[in-house]
Length: 286
Image (cartoon, rainbow, N blue to C red; front, top):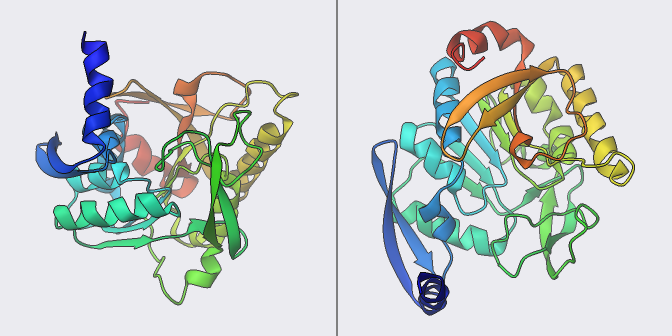
């Protein structure tokens, strides 16, 4: 009976706007539900990230840059442990942006800058390809050939090279750079290369599996290019071991490799000049 009632209630709820509350790290947040949008914040997965961010911020906490802000999942995790650190978020999806503004206002979150653009190597109009019938589809990608799934629809979005934003946004002293962009990680790293060189931030990134080197040669090639950039910038790679809510460990690896485990897709890239501080802060996880 519950399996029948739940989708019916969700359908009814999609016609209304209301507010729910969640508790993260002992802090309460108001979660607006707008025509059904916002439930991902109520469910709030990947709580392991809170511990990761908290330990990094113990080392330094000047600026957090979030490329792929979606509907504010990372913003809420960050604000649950630090109310003041400067947050700069990039999100090209218009529906996500509209929701983010309401979330920020509803919780009176300060020191936040949201830019309604994607990051790439060129400043141009691009397309965001949706694979789910969901306006906030977290699997949407600016790469048309990244997934085998059928593209259901697309939205035209502005893409910016970071260099074109320097007169508007201060990117000095980035402590953490989080990148979750469903396949276009390489372009974001290339665009932020100078800022990474100058600030040596800790980089949190999701890189989805290659599965098969021959069938997914494009993914494999892009993955190797990411590794080359990290080597050039003198970074080490740590794979994050976790379950839904708990950080289990950090494993240093030399290469991403070819695998099919979706639980092995999250990484923290550590600047070698900060490796000693990182080891001290995360010694129970290494």
